[in-house]
Length: 367
Image (cartoon, rainbow, N blue to C red):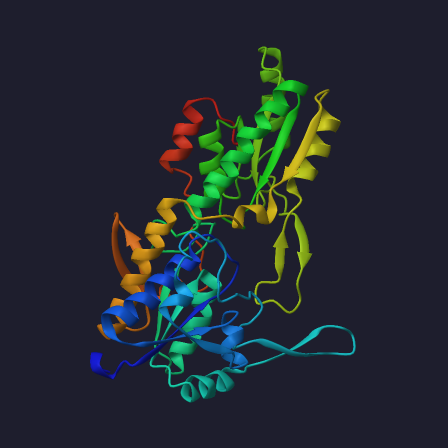
């Protein structure tokens, strides 16, 4: 397909929301219209909009003044995988799944979409990779507060989430010191500890527990008690929702049966609170940050990253480089095949420099 044959593109935001999505939508839309006289269709609620043919034309005014807004003006969904979509419910209450990709292809053809910009994480890229196999021209933009996409050093939304989690940990310090408590703050991240590691290090947390380093509860308790005997009247523990004890399992809060990614982690902080209280004489409290980490206005770094990623995504389309994901490697924007990141997660390596730096200043990882 030549550059001149690109006349109309679609843009969607899939998976969980995060700060910076609107920056990408704005960059794609304004660049397409102002620089290349293209039409842009906003696909509503991620892949659900493609399945149900819900989309509308975007004009410059639609994306003006949205750079600083969190969330996404297009809406999103983390339950709409065209290859495995819940179309009904069986008598026992379990969902009935069908492959509705043909329906998506019909809607793409009906709307005359020459290419689609898919903004999302590993689940969205898995869906995009499936569409690519069926002939849909897709370009991906990496989004997740977890920063766990393969082949990119950073995803937009991550920096804002670090700020939010760090601010919460900073605020917990005052209550912890006033009441001489062990305070546990549970941070998002699924199976990757990037968000907990960064916010824990930035806040000076005394204990950081991440999925990549299974912990021993006795080691955590011992560290808290040693701090107490050294005159430190409180302890701050930053724990990832996916952290787990050695030989144990992650704590599952919920299973969403009709979701492509049904497992919802959560509650490890409450488990730790009970265990520390039982094993020590220390008073312990838990705080689960939850979805507050996804909200709010994006920090400048995420506004800039989202804008540059969106611009590069459109450039890939115009250059005929479909089936590519915009990424940051060695501080340079480039791209990799979408299928290279589909269904994978980038985890914290045990020898990461941040872990070494944290250990050097006395941080406990529970191992």
